[in-house]
Length: 270
Image (cartoon, rainbow, N blue to C red; front, side, top):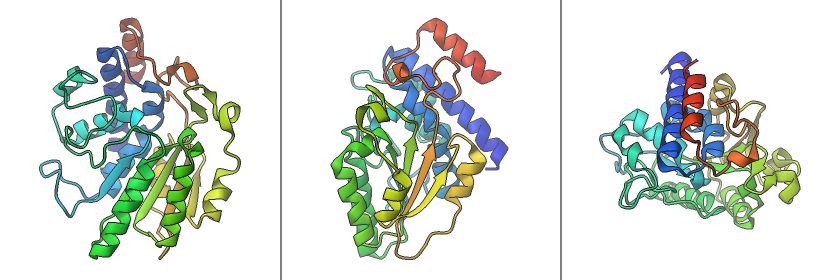
């Protein structure tokens, strides 16, 4: 998939996010939209996965640690053919396969059930460590929210990744600067995240615009360093692609109305 095709893929995922959350009348569009380029580029250019065999034991693994961004995850999986897009109609509905947070028992392509913030990166570390023990060449990717990095468990997992020399692990931080209660700086400032990641032993790549595909692809394509886990700190925009959602904390967990759905889709089509 070339860059132009991947850009079209990202636009389709953004449409999926708007439709899913509008259908349900609930969900988390803001942080889903900020992560689109990150998750799309990982799946489309980095991972060994087969939509026809989602439980292939030799597949690479992905953990969406910021599980509330499930609409982005589901959009990517559906566009790749893991399940039919008709399932979007049942997003966040009882007995549907697309729950409000990823459920590995219900959704093809989901490798870990997440949503309790801070825990996903620990799961990813366990997967990467297991692959090392089993002598497999499995790559493991996890996407965290920046607000999520206020959780102590995240840093325990980072220490373990360095201790066990998990060079098959890539941690991506979706750093959009906003969380449910306000800006990160207002709630609990994270300080110099790049310096902290380096201090915890990560090969750290900072991306000034994590919604720019060229920059994201360049970061993901940077050769790894033996014995060191890799971190990509991507500065993104919450609500990217929809003008009235961009940079607005109020769209963390609020669904668009029908009028807002139409406006958002018109903007994305344009």
